[in-house]
Length: 478
Figure 1: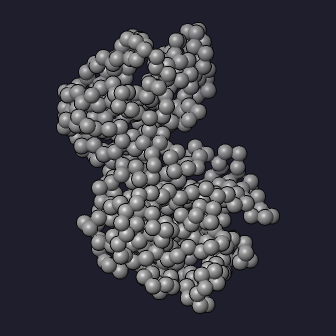
Figure 2: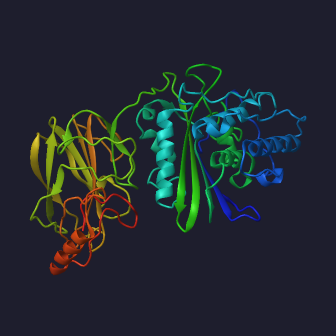
C-alpha cells in the first residue's frame, strides 16, 4: 500500500492491489507491457482536476515520460484523446475507455506486446454482475470507513467465487482487484475514476507496480509470478479478452468530510463465456461474514422470500425466532422456531459463538436437517463459554435453507434453490428478545421513550436498534 499526499492539497490518496502468488512453468503467451522505473505524479504534468483537457494532459505527459524511462521513441505509446461527450459518460464507460486506450496504445512497444483490449459488453460497457460486485465492495468500504481487500471477511477471489453468474464462469487469473481512495476535508473529490486509473498505472512504485500490472495485464504477467496466469483469451472474439467491473462510492469517511473509493475487479471468462442475464437473488445480510446467496426459487423462510440486488444490510428477514420463554444457557441448550413455506427443505445454520467474525465448522448448530412446511422447534446446543454472550455483545447467526440435501454446504457461496437469513441476537443477563425494529418503521420519540421506561423498569440498561459498532446486521436484539 502506498499513500500519496500532493503538496499544497489536503487530499490523501491510497491504493491497494490484490495479487495471487503461485509459481508455475512459463509458456509462450502474449506479453504484458513492461513496468516503468519511477513514479510519474499527476501534478508533474501541470494538469488540474477539473476537465477532460486536464485528463488528457496528465495521461499524455505520463506516456511521454514512460517512453523516456523505457528508452522508447517519442510517441510510441500514442496519445489519449477523449470523446466530446466525456462528462456525460458513466463511470463504467469512462474506466473501460481509458483502460482499453492504455492497453491498445502499447501494442508493439516491445516484442510480444500486442495490446488486446478488455471486452466491451453491449449496452453496458462492462460486465453488469462484475460491476455489481465492485459496487457492493466500494459501498461496503465507505459505509464502514474501511480500506483493504479483506474488510468484509472475504478475499477478492472469494467474493468473485461467491457472486451470482460470475462464480462459475471464470478461470484462474493472477490479478483480481485494485482499490483506490481519495479523501479531503472539503468539497467533492474530482475525477475519482480517472485519477484511480492514472495512479494505478503511473504512480505505483510503492506497490511494486502491482496495480499497473492488473490494469495492463495480457496473457502473461510481466513479473512472471503465477506465469502465465493472465487471460487465456479462449472466450468470444480473439481480438479482446477479459471482463472489467468498476464500483465508485462517494461520501463522508471517518473524520474526513469527503471521500471517493474506486474498486476495480477483473475476471478471465471460461470458454463458455459469462451470462449477462438480470437474475434475482436472495443475499445474506450480515456484514463481515462473507456472501451467501440463492436464486429466486425453492423453499423460503416465513411469509415469503426476500430478494435483494446486493448483500447489503436490510431489515427484511422473517421466519426464525428464538422460542419465547426459553432461556439459552451456556453449557446447556436453547431453541429456535423455524417457519418454512413453499416446500419442505433442508436447514443448516451457524452461530459465531467466539465472536471472531467467522462462521467456522465447529460453530454449526444445525446440520442439514430435513424440515416440513410450517413451524418446527429445534433444540440448539450452547457451548460452555460463548464469547458472544454478554450484556452488549451480539451473537451472529446464519441460516441456509435448500430444496435438497446439502451435507457439505458452507456459510458462503451459492446454494441450491432456497433462502438465507442472518440474525444478530443478544444473550445478556437481562436480555429481552424483541421482534425486529426497522429503521423504516414509524417509531416516534415518544414511543422510544415509553419503551425505554418499560425496559428500565425491567432492569435493562439500554436499547440498541439495528446496528452495533461493527455495523453488521442486527435483526433481533436489545
